[in-house]
Image (cartoon, one colour):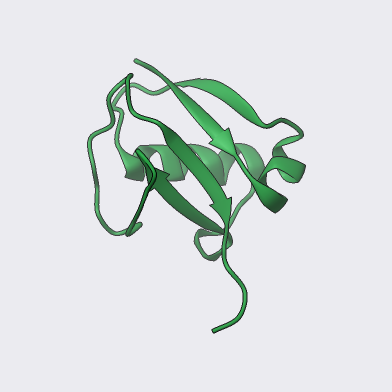
Length: 79
C-alpha cells in the first residue's frame, strides 16, 4: 500500500524533499519508522510523527491507511 508522507524542518532537509509516496508491505507506524531510519539514517530521537494532525507516540504501532495524513517532524527542542 502506498502512503503519502509529508516532511517538515530538518527532516525535509535530510530527505531533500517536502513529501513522498512510500510503499510499505505492512502499513504501520513502526514499519514507517524503520523505513525512514534505513533510507535517511534518522535516529528515533530525531523524529516526531503526526497522523491526521495528531502527534502520536512512536511506541504506538498504529495501522496506517492510504487516506491518513502522515507528517514527519523534527524533534522539538527545549522544555
